[in-house]
Structure formats: C-alpha cells, structure tokens
Length: 288
Image 1 (tube, helix red, strand yellow):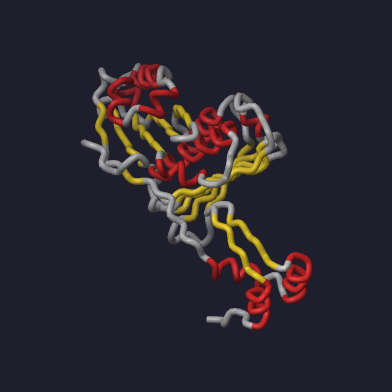
Image 2 (cartoon, rainbow, N blue to C red):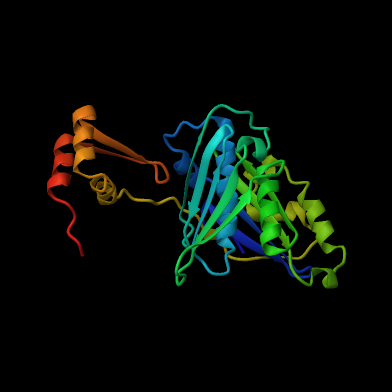
C-alpha cells in the first residue's frame, strides 16, 4: 500500500504471524513549521523533535481518539517541554532550556522532573492525567518504559531528530505472541535495534520496514497525515487580558505602553496597543 500523505504521517503495521504491532512516524514539513522562528539550538531541537515523533505515534495508536498532551518539567537544563496532538493528528509543541549536552540522559536533562500525560477524550467528565518520574538513558528508553508500565506489554522505541525531520519507530508485543512464535518478539526487537538515525530520518516507511524485517510478513495500514495548523485566536488572548482586571491593564499601559503576548504552543505573537487595551477595559465580553 503506497503512502500518499506527504512527508509528515503516522503509519501503523502488524506482523500477522507474530502478534506484534508497530508504527512509524515521520515529521518533515510539519516539524519545520513547529520550529519556525524559534531559534532552537540543535540539542534542544533534537529532544523536542524526538518527543514530538513519539507523541505522534502514541496519538495515532489511541483506541479512542482524543487530545494527547505530554509535559516534561524539572529543574535541569530543560525547564519545560510540551507536545500536544489532537484527534486529527494536528500537532504542536515548544521547549524552554538553557545550554546542555545532547548526550545527557533525561533524568539529568529534567533533574527531579516528571512526565505528565493528559488525555482528553470526548465523553469523559474530565481529562485523564498520569504522572511518572522522568528516568531512562534516552528519550526513547524513557517513553518505552512508560508504555511498558502503562500497557503491560514489551515495547521498543527508536527515535531520531535533526533540523529537517523527526522520526519514531515503535514495536510492541501483543498478548498471545509467545503462543504464535516463542522467538518472535526477541527476533523483531533484535532486528529493530539495528536501525540507524540516518535510516529513520531518510528512508520511507516501506523501505525502512523492508530493510529491517525483510524475512517477516508485515501488513501495512493506510497512513494518517500529521499537520501543524493552529490559526491565530486573538479574541482568546483578549479574554486572558480582560481577566487581569482594570488595575493590572492600566499598570501595563503606564509601564509598557502595550501588551505583547507569545502563545508558545501555537507559536503566535499578539500585540495590543494602549488604545486596544483601554477598549478591553471599557468593553468586557458579553456573557452568553
């Protein structure tokens, strides 16, 4: 089945004879748009790209689609990293950090940190949240460990990201796999560990799977396109400013002459001049 979704997609696959599932995500132009104008140093861009790629895979494999958010926060050189992906695979993210060595394990990148998952599914009274300590020798090991604990299934993840692309290869052992082939999981996992960063970033899904698992029967499912499409929402920002109250808005006018707000996740900047700020005071929103 040929991939026709462009350079940013999630594609699931299944080893029919082994009861092992998998997925591959590639962020190309979507990754470029997420980074646009942010000036991330390569080390920080690599970490954010890896988290974006694994978030895309997990969002694309949800049994019940919803909005998935991963937030990593701690006291290390990476202060905050957030990636958000909705049910249509519309993805965004940002990170804030000082200088650091890209080879540092997550436990040092996010010292004393924790990983928070938020899943907002239609029909739930409130979003589901899960908190775990940040640990592991790599971003891939951190998320593989998280998935193994939460889903109680052996999981493998391989991640790569540079300034042009970000990719994730995911494989997971399903219940009943041992009864189909006692050596199946160890064989697939061993083959997957041979993948290189260049292959993750450069090969398309079909070529990558053929290179890694050419002796196995792999069933590919249709790709789902990833996108980064978060339009500006000036009225929402206006409501945030209104919530500050008259005194605080007047202080902003006196001290700064304008309000300048950057929406980090969607990567938009909003500027309200003094007249617009005064108008917010005089014309609060009408209750519906």
